[in-house]
Image 1 (cartoon, one colour):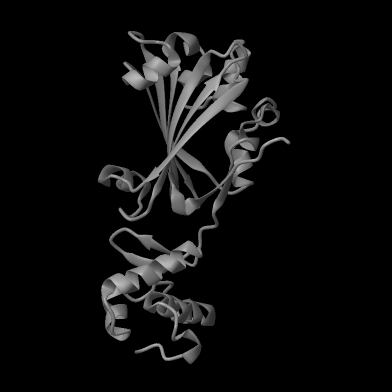
Image 2 (cartoon, one colour):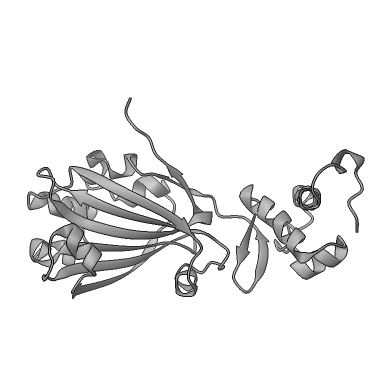
Length: 252
């Protein structure tokens, strides 16, 4: 089927197709199955190349109308983006009174996590940042889910000697999480640095988050420093870009 609306004649072909698909979504055409036709079916229907259809679907993805599921197809989007306020979520007023950082992110939405804890020789970059070359680190690797969707993998590294005997070495770190436990031993975070990179995932990374290879991932490396400017944690995070809106608020 060709798009023939004269008002759209000057638009690129992929935008015309995106407009038609958006109108179908708004009309409820795909509400029952919640799945769009395949790229092959759409390319035949619109008599155009699959790359053009793919670009049209990318427009819909950018508008948060659809999402791709690896090996399954393109579906109407139902997951509401998590608003991650990098500054506000790390405030002592949250973890200092026993709230989890995630409480700020999710605002009451459900959360679960898979946790792996090991004492290991850290990678050189981590050891150098923490100032523990030649020493062991405690590694806490977690995969977080919300509403049945994998949203983030986070790997935290601590000097093993620093956190020995604290609940940071246990599955449940207790109220306020690891930062509250560091505070109890006089090494609570006073400030942070985050470095951000965005790229397409490797195959193993896509499998971890259950996303397609065409879905960008956000990598954040956060270093937490105590009041003496000594690093107490490095956290490497990998976020599904389709699950988040990143917010940064700064005091004037």
